[in-house]
Figure 1 (cartoon, one colour):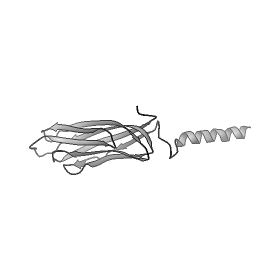
Figure 2 (figure 1 turned 120 degrees about the horizontal axis):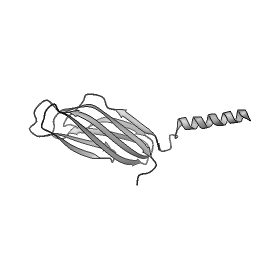
Figure 3 (figure 1 turned 135 degrees about the vertical axis):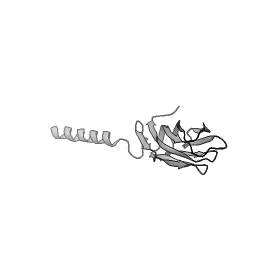
Figure 4 (figure 1 turned 180 degrees about the vertical axis):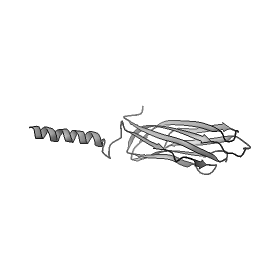
Length: 147
């Protein structure tokens, strides 16, 4: 009887530690990725700053980045255009005309993926200036449902 109990406990512990199978949503699991420090963004195509691969399911995502505006005085405002993808929040953040100034941008959103995919954040300078993403992080949390 003791041997059965021991095997049963090992199986339960294994199932708990492994978590959901690859076919199940990641409810209650958190994914976290830090951005590569000192990433340049400009007026070209959006730069993917962080991405996490997730199984099908519902998620809430949060991203925060620390940006340094360029050193050349702009003719118009430094402007960050950031998207939390897919189908998350899109933000246009005018950081002003001050050069070499640190600013913080926060995005959040909720998404349901019908199949496995990635949740990511991408940014560009909407007015064509060059900025530097000094640091940042993307956190994605699996939830049971989004109403």
